[in-house]
Length: 305
Image (tube, rainbow, N blue to C red; front, top):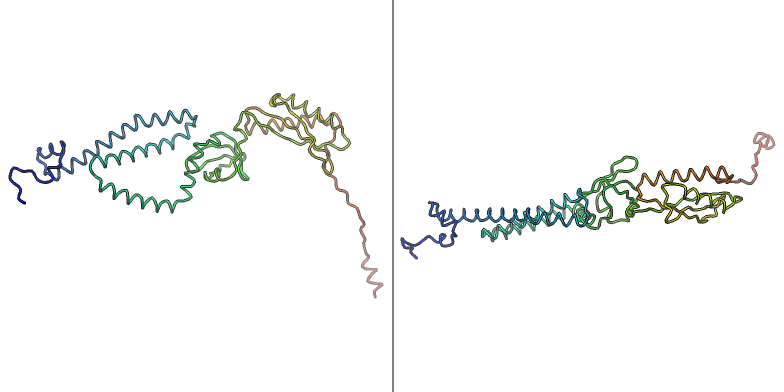
């Protein structure tokens, strides 16, 4: 089919206002169509990106503030939000620029790449998902004292892959997040108070009631021990050499430092009172019974000869 001198090329019939303007400015129709698509892509991407930064990000920050999420913990989540905005902007820009076929090809390549990366990075992804759960469930915060397995320490940093914990020996542990979400984790300072227990051993001949009064009295005197709930004492053990009296008391606004200091001062005060009142804290005693026979090997040898 011939094209008359007054008719437009085939590509020109699909041109929009931008393409038509570029063609009238002297560009070839095919080049004008390509330039129009590129300009549409840039315009759509910039528009979506600006909307996301000005509207979506502030809304996400406000949601994090309402959940009382730590400022330090918000940074990786905000970065993920920015990546999400960029991905949406690119997808919309591809559609707006009529790059449909190219977008489908890119999606197929991205899916294959994601599958390969996922198989090669299972542990990393597992830790990443665990980090998301830590941010949402908030089993601990930065500054909390936590215990898991045979480790304990104070949380210094939380990221989407690892959590850094400073032990009480001043060692820094870099812990994969999955190790903290797949096992039992203890957070002694999550509440506003913490109950402590300590067993005092007294002799079988000592007065249990007198020892109990001393243990409670020293707890009531200590400024770091709460009056409500009140301290209490229970006889819990009848050992081989002592009677175990378990003291239970509470401290407010707990931390590892407060826990160690308060317990140490309290136990010292009770020991001093026991010494003043003549109450013994016995140590284990072992009695060996039986006989020991020695043979004079020299005389035995002579008799044999």
